[in-house]
Image (cartoon, rainbow, N blue to C red; front, side, top):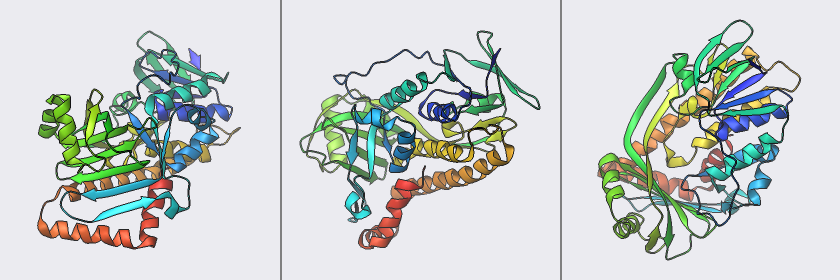
Length: 391
């Protein structure tokens, strides 16, 4: 029996972050991960990972406190100072810049793999944090004082609190029979790294198409990471195209804002859904990150919402105090659930709004975007929300 103060289920970016937060506060922490975790060494000559995240300034503040952000700065990241948003059925365009916000940048594009490696590097340096990989949790039991986990290889774990950060289709949520509201967008996200004729100018670009949003995110090597959310039928057709045809279709969909798309990496894809757990706290088990909520990637806020969960727990749970405090954990659940449910509905509404082709709705949408673009106060409020409210 491994006896700990806190167990964290899932060693991804959010799970590793909360484990690092709590270990730094002096708690004895164990992280259980279903995948085998091999020790990885970053090689700057490797191709940039297909999965990247747009890390908000508030998430960067959390990662800086954890000692992770300086490690990333020594590797390869790409700040962006500008953001341009426009849509297919209209002429309006919104342009945001870091100068308008009085900041050095609006966000930073980071490879998921690199961020996870940096988190694990910091965790491995702490004597009171242990990672157990290649384990599948088969049972969760609770009594008045502890929560116990059994795994597929007959190992047992016990802790005062279990934090489940094991992603979409969470094992903990399934074993505890937590009701989850969910739905499909009937879309797939296609990701790839592409070369373009023109430089990206450290700008994040997003064009809303009737079939789904298309984003170009700047990478440090001059390439762009694309996230093309497309209706299922179109997505299948795009994935089946040879590279040259895909590049041509991509350039057309992007209105050649960066000239022709001249090359693409292999493409990957994943289906798009939304979900929200009805209960985040069940006894001594707390769901966070994608185990508790999931949104459309159009705003790039998925992992930032997860880091927002971690940041609030960091503020609520103090060193030297009991880690299981139902009153504080209920407060966390109420606050973050309200925020993430609002975000889920907002992003869903935006996706549906920009999919409309009705001329009157297109006109209203154009007027709304023009108002935001021309009003400095509204624009600033929009950007402050995106930059600071997620963590």
